[in-house]
Image 1 (tube, rainbow, N blue to C red):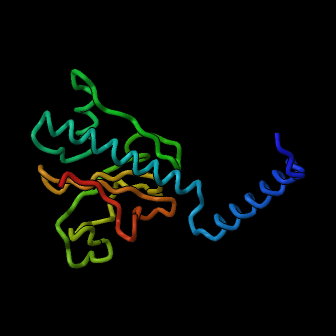
Image 2 (cartoon, one colour; image 1 turned 90 degrees about the horizontal axis):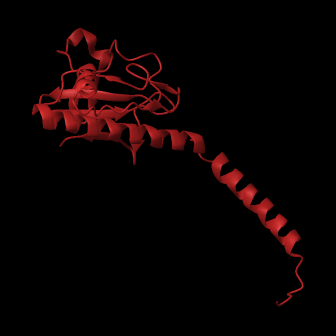
Length: 173
């Protein structure tokens, strides 16, 4: 073994201190914590899980359900049940209204403009009675028709998850 005259334990301690400081300054300068990033990734995974359940439902019924509760009921009573429960990573809860919910388009009344948002070019009523006050970590099923839907996720700030500046959305199209 070659001896370079270095005190290896001292060098490793010094390197680990420098690495810890670098990690601290990198994460301190980021607006979102590493934990929030992991939890946001979990919400995206939950969105993909719900998408798989929706596509399985479509294969059986040749349409998408009008409500998420219909989807859950049908997926649970199927001869080969395909409902998969998933956990809201921010609240550690499961089930309708806790880890997922519905968002429905309603006829738009011009008096109710504050509750209208354009999401991917679709005019949607975003004040839904089904959404809790804190939608953090929830996956939202937004059926558009019997043949089309969107899935959205809410991040740590209670706002729609964005990826590269755009709302992150899953759909069948």
